[in-house]
Image 1: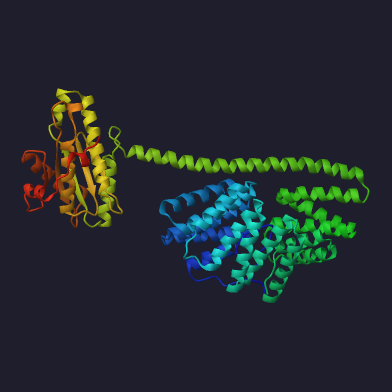
Image 2 (image 1 turned 180 degrees about the vertical axis):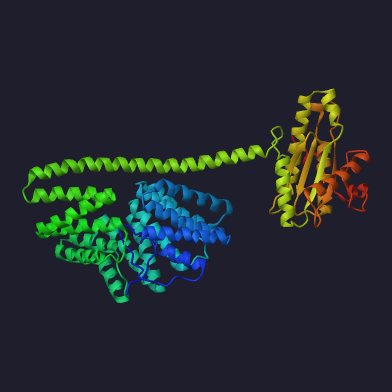
Length: 560
């Protein structure tokens, strides 16, 4: 009986899902897809796209992006690293904007794998650590252990074997306790491969022995990758016959065709290990048969790393049987292909970095253009277009306590006439700074209040979450700060004042009706003598509003 495991293994690993029933819910299907994504790449890619469509129809933004990450992972495995990274980066930035820990953790995890595969171990480790930091506490414990294993893999790639060992062992203990034997086999495989790379064959042997015992006891079917790990360690130990037996069993299993496109690199690496084990055992005919198959298949499928390794093994095999001319020729080809592989890896790394840069740069540029389109060029405040869009949204959401202030500078025409338009612009900018400062100090949660310049000397104060009384109090505070500002540097002995009309949204209010009500209040403020705040819907006269608002000294509020 063979069970399922979730992730692309380090140096191989994992087990095979041989027919689990599809879960009923979208969330369950996503979780299952994430578990088996190391197998049947094209099938998983198609399933991820189908789930993404279902999530989109269901308007489940998080599920849609989880499916997109599986899709990106599969594209990377098919060699389309640049497009894969663009998709991951899109989801990553979406998760950052919405502070979604689970998605951030998953994007960091994929980016860690990408950078490790590109040979950038420090960046891979950085993303692995970020993935652990972003992981939600609510994630199932078995999922958390996958992230612990991911961190161990990144530490091992960076050469921090002791730290990696500590994480592997912790994950092994917890998975044993949880009874997650398929996951345990995966971790044991990655740990064993790490010890093999580190040169600690004693530990590597202990781990593969335990791996095989757990797999046999609990009916966990091993992948080609896991068997390749076992065979490689047996070769390193000089146990060539055992290595041949393990590799041949795996090749016989793969020859049944039951699992198409399962971990192709590990499958061909297994053929290479089989060739090496047979050669060291003295079976030169069998070694050559495996080697020729490995060379042909890895070349046909474009698995360059295995192809280069097979050329090196072919040169060694030729030398061992005394065919030194052929050994030399093969070594020359090996050297050329090895250099070409390094060049391709550098090119892929450069394209990946460029994809990340271009995605970020394009998004930042688009954001700048959006900001510019929504901003008033003189004051930097939002403009009428932004005002209309946002107030429509707030009204559609039925935002409780939505108030608006419509502010106009008193006698502003005389400023332009008596001084200059340049001075008038400076007055507008100064008032804008006052408005931003006072309104931002009133922000309480979301959506946040904002200020917009509607045109000329007219400004709108959009105040979600404030009822009429609170809005009038805030506007009165603005009126005081503007009046008490030291205007002498710009206006000699004049004082710039403002009048503000306040309106309160009601059921059925529109942008136009809210503006009409605020404009009526503003007109009343102007008629009362200017330098005033009026809320037409209130029965309380203006002087009473002023009486109940505590006065502030200029030193508390006036801008420097």
